[in-house]
Image 1 (cartoon, rainbow, N blue to C red):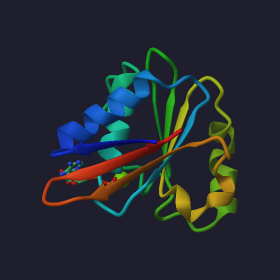
Image 2 (image 1 turned 45 degrees about the vertical axis):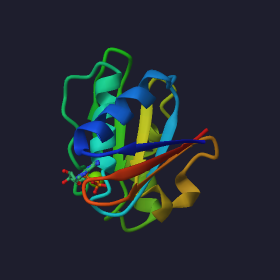
Image 3 (image 1 turned 180 degrees about the vertical axis):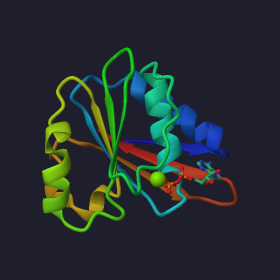
Length: 138
Ligand code: ADP
Ligand code: MG
């Protein structure tokens, strides 16, 4: 387990970038944390870390965004508004099995049955004004 403290959005992006440098294709990352914790900023860093030039934005209404990077696609899901595991499965099951890319899932805890057991668990918590604590499990 590693724990990082950030004191602004840019530092949370940088933490995502640093993690991405260590990730191999096929990795699933389950992101936990309240609304506004900084999950989407962390994903922005992951995309940057794989050399992508798109700026990740919240896929709350789309369920899924896909970002192309030189190392492979980054599939970014947000389950906040998803109604059922069936809905998710029908629309994104191909992407959830992405040996060539990364899958990053916000609000993964809403549908734990969909999250592969080998997923990296990342939790972002508020720790004061503008500060966050990021915990990454292997
Ligand atoms: P989430 O996806 O978890 O809902 P976002 O990344 O969309 O969160 O938004 C995080 C919000 O918190 C942004 O408005 C950002 O400016 C603010 N913020 C303040 N401090 C931090 C920090 N240390 N890390 C990340 N975001 C921060
Ligand atoms: Mg978000």
